Length: 281
Image 1 (cartoon, rainbow, N blue to C red):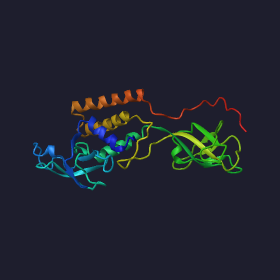
Image 2: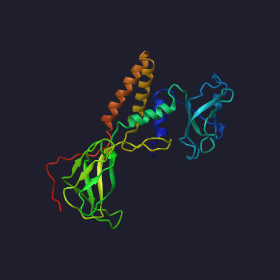
Image 3: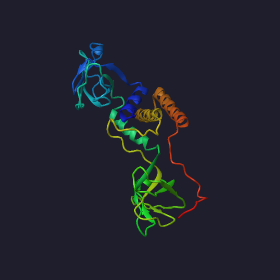
Image 4: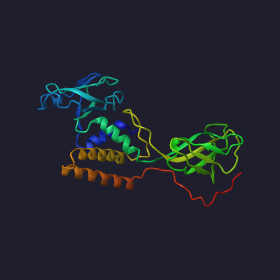
């Protein structure tokens, strides 16, 4: 099952001690009723501006995973009203979660995007097609962070499932100024009309939607701990580090990050020494 932005935020709120969970006893596309919370001592609108998650739906379909800002809360009935409709009705039996606005959910989305940029993932770029009388090719700006770790050439284009890739040794990488493409220089003139496959470590795509998938190469617990550490850092900065408990929590979250990086390292493309180039056509 895919690990999504919603899953990561749910895990982060849980690790922060902010997540509450209940079973919906009714609802609509703009509300969720948790009957067990009716008259439990909460005040009206105590959860306003917090976040509501549909953690699991009874049929495994929409609106499972979706989250919205809470715009109102009626304590007498345990009714959460959300600011924007979800894509389907919140049904009786759906599992919902909610948290207050101590850590605004859009802030956590932004933190998630900031911290995931610090994790380089192994990627390939295959949009370069060889041309006659050409050994130099422009690379996309996204490949500029580091030189490619490997370059392959397609030796068969008769079928998309039979590319017969062969590694190219001795290629050169020429950096460029900011915002302009770098150059890949091949050590020989290949036949025209074949794709190149460039291996590099790059940034994760931006996370916008609740169902955006986190790369499977990133450990789930590592990513959640990174969000938590970022959220706690934000909170500690906001109160000038005066809450010793929160400072200790941030330090513990960063310890978790170090441990998860050691136990479950993220895949990256391995670089080979340029001492032996092999045989070239």
